[in-house]
Image 1 (cartoon, rainbow, N blue to C red):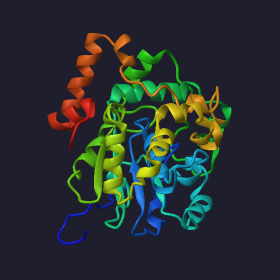
Image 2 (cartoon, one colour; image 1 turned 135 degrees about the horizontal axis):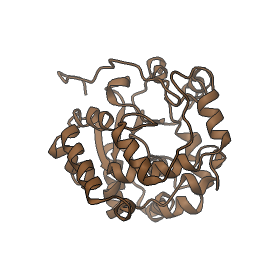
Image 3 (cartoon, rainbow, N blue to C red; image 1 turned 135 degrees about the vertical axis):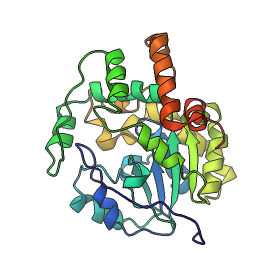
Image 4 (tube, helix red, strand yellow; image 1 turned 30 degrees about the horizontal axis):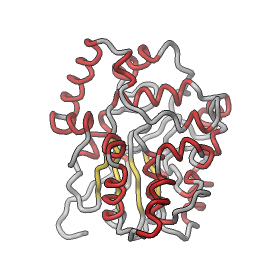
Length: 301
């Protein structure tokens, strides 16, 4: 995978209430590392669950958040997290929410980028933020090393939250369009795969097989039905404490708040035609028509 390929290069660091991108500078990559990348609330945990079940399962007792850490999250600090990741002896499945230009990219690793319509992302993100409890705020705001202002509880309803997020390009979390755009530009690399939330909803088994092929995971046909069962969003919802970080203690309602509905289109009942037209125009402006179309509908890249 080396040759004359032009590999992505890291050009900046990202720091805020959630991010410390410098941890990637110190990671010793392995030849079989898997990195699952998303903006956030795009099906990240679902794809982590799918990947772990195909690699190590099927096993109903997997706690995927422990197996597959969010590397650039500041909690716990990298002085604690990095040694734990380096000590893993199984094939590592790492998670990132960074744009590609803030990530150390390894030609030796395999990258699965998961996309989802920004409106669906926002509805899930609002639930995630609005139901966060004091434990969550203390963790992301008070862990030493935060750069920039703390994140505050949301004000207003989801409609206002959408408008603030769109007008503030990801406010109060981090920029949305640059994340998608940065990965899209390298979609043709041999060790990058694009996956879409909608495609997983339409044909989970087909997309699972595509992921398995990309990651060189042999499929055990005798246990495939179990693997599919433990990978489904419905199963994750029923056993959310095994998928949510720390069993979901950072949200009101616990793990089932973190593993929310997994549905699309809730925004259609709230957004005005002007809101929808504004979002769609912004998507084309930021991403170009091809990428904007993929982000809205999925399909082969």
